[in-house]
Length: 199
Image (cartoon, rainbow, N blue to C red; front, top):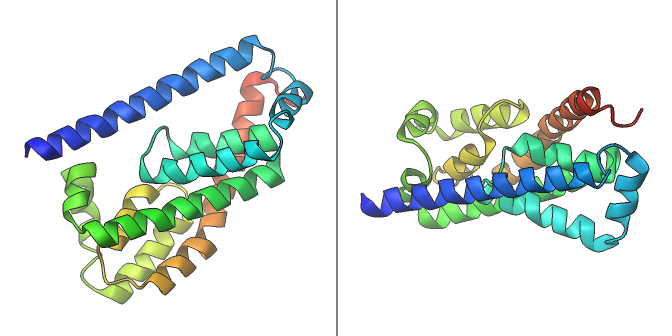
């Protein structure tokens, strides 16, 4: 019980620190004029060369395994930093890699990991779908396809079921693009309206 509480506290602390760093970075970018000029932002990111894309992809992959900030904000950052097309591709590569990693970790650690990382209420809500392999695969594919389900948890949950690596990988690779595109485009439009970016 103490270990479970400690793990949750560490996870919450990491998320809060990550969110704080993102807020600090946002304020710094705003003061530096990077959020009021598309050209200035692209010049800034371009200064890092190919390393910028690799670091972002790695960040998105880690973000699935250890949530640092809401996934939608990561998708928004990808589009803002790299543009709609490259941003989508980098988001897709990072999130898919992280989803595969989450499945592998859960497959090796089993259900005890779920109880250490996620609230009991969330586990109870989705557990009813895990009894039948084919039924779970259908529901899992549907929930990964829509952009409102807790994807990170579902990837860990899938790793504790009988779902095969082949079927899991196919679902992630085929169903993720739609939700990533909706997050990326929807939040970008909202961000543009709020900040007047890309006028």
